[in-house]
Image 1 (cartoon, rainbow, N blue to C red):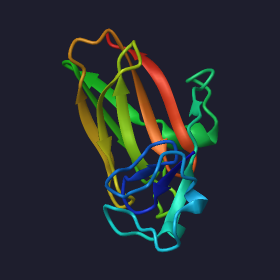
Image 2: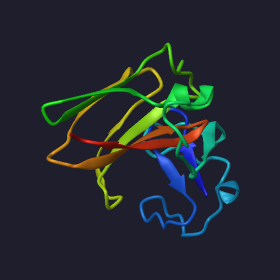
Image 3: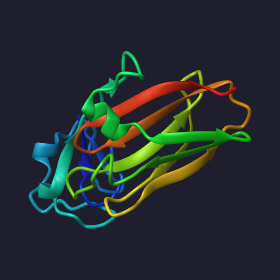
Image 4: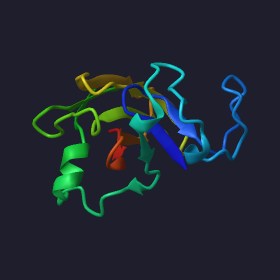
Length: 154
């Protein structure tokens, strides 16, 4: 399982050995010492949130549920550049519920680019599409999980 720091973008992955923190692989989050802090921002272990890894792909992007609508960005594509925005009218960010990452994937599911956010940031960015015919855009929310959809670049 993975746990996300509620303050920054750090993710603790139980399956990975962390030499810098002297944590062996397969160390459960609950088994970390009580004085464990985020290595980047020093947020206490109690402020980490379980990160859901299941990806939510809508069945029909024309009929999104309210939860999906909160997590799908407004996009525009112009001259091989993708611009996206998730504003406070669609997803009202709070310390325990915010978009912390948006990633661009190619048609082989390789992550090409990403942008990380803190809960106080405006979720807005541009990606260069670099001649991609199709791509996937994933939105990572610390409370609700991952939301994604595919686009054709024509």
